[in-house]
Length: 513
Image (cartoon, rainbow, N blue to C red):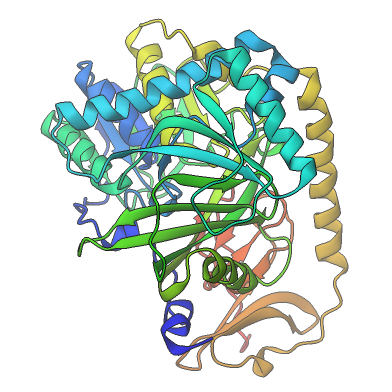
């Protein structure tokens, strides 16, 4: 790997979106507050919900455990599309044409909402209409693409089968969905944040929600012991921080995927592309601050905490980029975590039927730009007392025998296997054997621990047992994190929680004890 590629790979992963957008900073919550609605989670779903509720006249507080837009929204590829891979044939098979049509119509309405908001709020965010393509490189998936085209025809979706796409790729066929879009997600959402605070909305960063108390009001209690009293609570924290016996951790699994931002040698023709096969390959472009095209190459998904060395995924994407667009320079690399529901349809609505004042939005299946926007529309309507025509499609209380039961058992058998595997691992490496920049599972007096030696030579040792349900976390070389293979919790080198469902940090280990 030459130096211009190595530099991007050796740096800490940082998405282009966050580096190229100036976001406001907000103080931590240091007092009790009373509002109409508390929104937990500062991604696209939480910000859109808070924005629409404030427009509807509600007094709203939005809190985030970290900084706004530093989670999945800040690490997306930012395709605004209703073409969610090969989903429509599958939805028709499992749920019927009416359900599939509602899914498509609702996602299309979300695209229109984004476009209308950009126009009405005069937002400069590089929005542009693009055609979206899903392509097959094998005969097996070419048949699936053909079936998806038949589903398009049944549902009245504007799309055509194509034998070629304008990229240096040999394909069997492709399916295009016309008039989709792309944008700079953080510049778009910054405008919504500014509008929200301009309407009196309150935002608190560095404020982790710990639990919810239900009584005369619905009270969010923070890690520091402060509370937000409100009539309604909306949970948009990626993984719901409060489960309320909804057992969301049994109904979703976490996947990581990877993105490179490259300066290409070949001219990029426009359009957004995704492969039908695994390993997934995704392409789109973004015009950077100098007016040059930054090509975003994404994919190589896997279950969080499972599989090969995560740096290998970045290398695989680079090899693909070299082949298809030619790489002059790898400028950025980052990864994203997504939650996948049992039936691939998000959960948006009441947390459970027993919690009518608590709402949730989660499980966007890698398509958060439209589904997160749709969540804001559905949840704000439900809280404001308006009927939303598509709310039933996304209701968290749905449970369909096929495919939900099959996937329920499959996912939870996988969790059980990972739980046992981590406990039985034979440990040989000692902490003192770790080189600078190296992390691994190590043996500390017969105990399974996680070690990382930073560039200054300092050792960071933690207990690898996930504080959620006791699975053993694994080292993520690409992102320098400890990742749980059971439910996707992620921790820093010092054990701090980066992503839930875990709420408590990993225990730090002092080698002098």
